[in-house]
Image: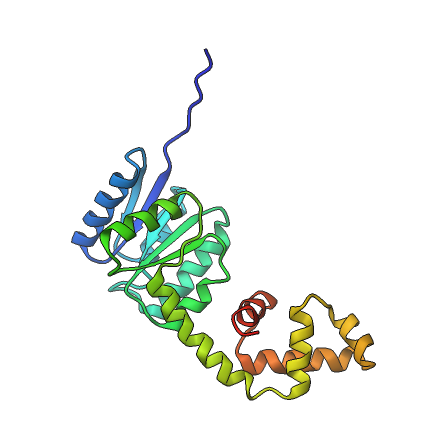
Length: 216
């Protein structure tokens, strides 16, 4: 008889409060008793250092700690996501900064769960996230909706030509196709796109698509 063996998933935890670390450990063991919690640290900087010597499958972390502010924590976390593309990241956070949360949307392996959701819902969100199903909890979605409202205001600042170009790009056309349809040079169409992205505060096509998907 052939017995299949699935190795235990390894986990790293980051929280600056020892009691919260204990609570996270208990929650994870409740969700999946086979998980092996190999790293527990009080800052993302220490997590990044530990992961240089010990790889893990899942990282559960807040966005900041007593040693890092929100921007520093976000920068470290995004670098970890880039350096370890297969890492399943579960951000469990009190952060309600819609601009910071927005930056996580481009990371496909990141789930974001707000602290303060009911325990039953939180367990369900963690189970889905641990199963590699991306989760954005309701409170996080509500936070992100505020930036969509801001984006609608910003869109009103675009010129009609810039808005028109974005709509065509969002509908699947490329720059050359838009240029041919409008009988303009591709340089002009590209300039409209670049100007619109600058006004909207996005830097990549992925960020632009997410924004347009929530606006058009």
